[in-house]
Length: 273
Length: 267
Image (cartoon, rainbow over all chains, first blue to last red; front, side):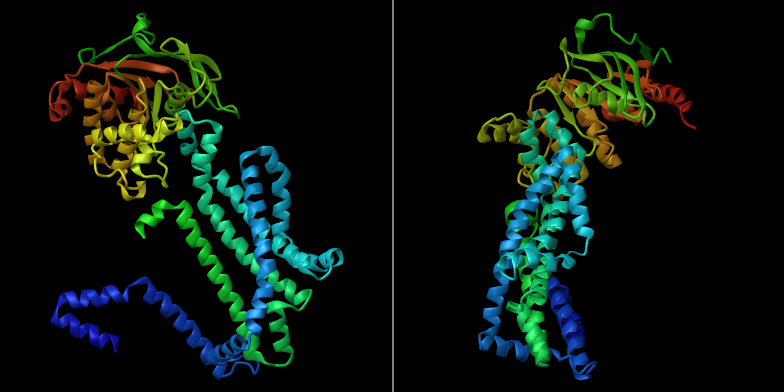
């Protein structure tokens, strides 16, 4: 249908064709297209069905709507978000500061970097039983899990961001008589901010993994409870709806973070957009 | 060759005319790489002196030592008779890769040297606007570096160096990252700048033609560890048009003679 309308426009007037082309190549069109492809494949796989426990996209959507309507989804989200936000905030503040200090000071680097490299490489979910022993099954354990998952990537990205400041920019700062504080504040930190924010986005995503992991492994609460409960009574569409909501929430949080970055630190990106 | 250019002693006996003096400077990098070996040179006031030599010969190292960005292993650098211990307000640097802050506008980049010195905003922006106009970028004040061409970016770098009103301009292969046509225009503008600004220029390049075209004096450095091989003062009329300079016999002979001298360093 699209081809017909565009080719007709092309015969009548070149400008009509160009306008149609401009609309069709808009980034939004491609983004919608990619979701349509994924959801269509999901719907097909659910209807075929590839497994009795795999619901179609439409069933999941309906189940999600029902859960939103009866309030169980909102209540669960609220429980999940609290430890997530606390944990990610702590990780962001401590992690960025630790990473910056390690990037600026060799001694701090030697002291700190090995710890975080090990932390990033280790399968930290294995530590969760230990956390339960230490903190019980409450909020503290969930927050700690989020921190353990989110902090290493934030620290290491901030560290690398500082270390990779272009040498010539730092030399420029020195040659125009900048003090060490000025060079750090006006050159090194702004130059590092894109990679620091990339680390924050990765940390946020890991934080989501952490909080869901805690809810699945420690105490069935929040979204983790919705997932395990609906799995146990074979309500698979609701179980998938709960999973989908976590993914959606993670995507929303991460794009919000990107907006904040551009708004606060990237004037050169703002002027193009 | 003597008709085209005359050779002079490495250290001018009339040192009073020297804005910058390099005294027995050697540089050994950590790890044992010897970049400079006992270099002594004078850079006359108000002139453009070029450091020319095979690639990797330590030209940029010497320039950064003069800038105070690198410490010399031994020897000293004097600017107006005072020993250099670090960067100073009388020297400004123009970087090979421009060294512009991508998050700052042209105006802020040009005013940045003054910003670091604590000059009030309106004052430094007035000065910056003046030099932006002088390098031909009027109207681009609120653009960001990624919106400019390579040549325009280096004009920003030049305006930033001019804005701090330094006596000595240190230029590290400033035109090597711009295209050939822009480069020629730059060279012509640079000659004008030397005449108009009455500043001392120290210029690093690996282009023989560029060196002969823009320089009052060319210092030919040998391969690492660098020594001063020869000093040449091209005897070329500067008051004629660019095309006439480029076709001038003295210009062509000097280029050829430097090329013959440098050829031995290529394997």
